[in-house]
Amino acid sequence: MSAGKKPPPSKSPPRPLRHDTPVDVPAVEAPPPAPKADLAPRNTDGPESALGQLRTLETLESTYDAWAELKRDHAASLIQFREEQARLAQQGSFLLGAVRAAGMDTGSNTPGLQPQGAASDFLRDAEAKLARARDAVTQREAESEARYQAAFTEVRTTLLDRVRRYLASSQPHLTLLLRRVGAERSILHVARVGPDEAVLLCYLLTQRVPSRYGFLFDDSTEDLALAPAPLYPEESIPADAVRPDAQGLLRVIDASVDVLPLKGFVPLRVPRPGGGEDFFRLLQRGAVMEVEIADGPDFRSILTREEAERFAGHLLRLKLEGRLGLDIETG
Image (cartoon, rainbow, N blue to C red; front, side, top):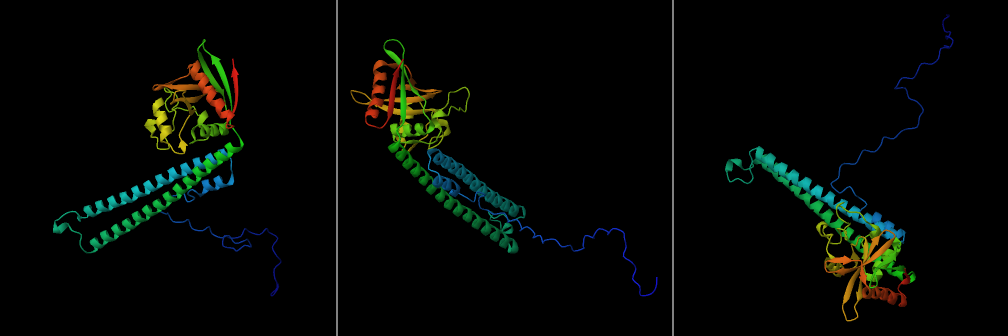
């Protein structure tokens, strides 16, 4: 090859680029660093999500859905705050144990065991940090609880307002079915109603709303050996008090203000001719609701002729007042 003459280009395929060879590709930004762990509860939305649903939709079912979501979020928030307080208490206990293990017993009167110098500064600084962390958690918990209680008030107020507006424009309609048992006894059934009508019927007969949308159709039981409980463990009803007798149910109804934790039935009072009232309930049984009357601590479904006629007359009076639709069928 003569001097100054360039060699012809090679015909062989190009070799792959080295890893450090720059290429013309769009720049890729590194993902932002993960946020540091925070002491606040993981549920950052608080009650706002449930309230957003409440304000967007105006059906009874959506109102109850928002209420149920709010209850779940509130329960989760309480658990998270309890866990955080327990973690801080555990840290404080660990710190005290470490101090004792180092020979610095803060509760001892022995001069040789008192924290000295840098050890004393360490202990004082660590306790101050833990105290500030506990105070911060307590403050956040108080603020969170205030927000949730305000949200619960809004949900209950909205639900009561919607139920009243529904009743003003749409009456529950009942079909009463008479089934005779001999000449002087009978069983009364009421044809099944829908979930909206069940809520409206409960308010019409008690001036209170049920605590759950599908309360009338819930036949679940925590013990297969027992019939479904007539109450839910909510609205100040403890888990061991969900199966009161008839008089206990009446006391629960009398003690409530706006909300009843009823399950599987609708209660009502029917006046007696000579004064006083009888406590009846409409117990859900598949395709119908069976009318039962409180008889001592229990209920019975076989009614005397006078009881059946008085119950039917009470519903008829509500119909004549324009508060209830009613059909009566005998068979």
